[in-house]
Image: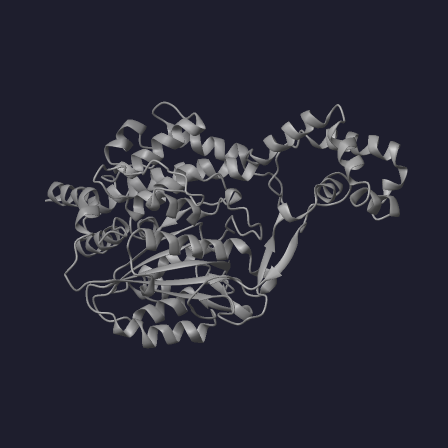
Length: 495
């Protein structure tokens, strides 16, 4: 009986991406997008660009844009609500003066009104609640709500409820995991929910599968699954006022490009169709993001959070379960195509080899973890810093008043004599080497980004083992709940 159940679960995981795209003739997708910051100073241009990228994706897929209800920052209010940095608008002399004699922080900063069309309103919690009252209530059995959140987030404010994190909304308001869970409860019976959330501390919302986001209160009867930029107790990467989308590295940049088959800049990417069924599922987009993104994020999905609560590893009470230190060749036997892609891809990136890769990843993670009692900031070795100081010192020898760049000579060198200033820097014998090193440093991983790559490998491996062990534990209701989560995760925008 156990073998039959295990085979059934393994078959479901491999085939669910096909069955999840089948719906009744009347079933429909409804999209709800919550975006923006809590105030103009916390409402960066990247949040706006994320929404616009998602709009383009829906349009390119032939999906009805009218079915995407957007709530963004202050809604359609005409005030300047968006923080923007356009470095190309800053004269070159000013850029070099900031780089060598001052600070590049906030260089080119300005504010404007956001440019998202057809915004339904601000992200005030009362507006979100009204959407569930007026629109969500009209959904029908078999429909699916796709909720995309590109905003800021905060950790839980309650010590004994660390997973009750929140989405930061306009005017310094918020919606917590428990509050969103109650809103989702209002949807008609038979409506399923898929969430994609990229805010800091997003992982708390992976527990929406439970009533009020609390495992102690039981599982929600609603089918809920989702994908989250990082775990509940960490910030996420990506929010920036810079309008240069080539620099964007946050979670949904990779998630949506995997599904679109094109980057934000319209460059083609190889579709991560790891199971070769002709469709890129949400799960495959998540796996692609884990592999491609070089950030501090530790992405998770609902099924992984569920397994952490409901499954376990081999111990004295459960000798038939797989051990956590399973050999790698055995681990791959239980891996789905997406799991295998992540495990093999990260093994190559991290140079993990042999049968004991999980143990090796643990050792490497511990070696890279900061030591000491205080918090340490992520570091990279800035090989260009000494050359930058040398160039600056040499120019101060030529123009001593540059000891303070706001002295009259500094203003003059950024205006009337800007050509002289630019030439003096770019003709310096060390400038070419400095620029090469500075560009390399910008693209290198800091300590925390290197550490999280090992954590991603470990979490993926653990999820593979826990999934098999869930089957071995043999609780039919728990397995059925897990199957419902998998059905949502292996779905796609193609219905």
